[in-house]
Length: 119
Image (tube, rainbow, N blue to C red; front, side, top):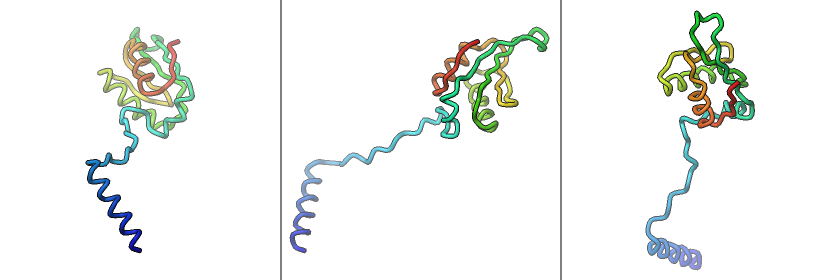
């Protein structure tokens, strides 16, 4: 038993000479990144389409091809609209953004880990 306490004393002395020990590193969580539920969607490619028909001549950017739940699509649409400062909606597994924002949407999606293309 005496050997064990001697070993512990030497270890404590060694720690004292090293200064503060670094805290155990934990992976940081990026809240702007897609959640784990949308990790499945990262393997699927999203299509970004410009549409004018049936909108009174106004343009809309449509994002389709999601394989995640409708709730996750709605949350992503909310973040996208807030980032771009534009209106839109999420219905039926698609996101509609008002106006021709294809390049902005593409950069947002790729920065959040999604594979996307403009059609």
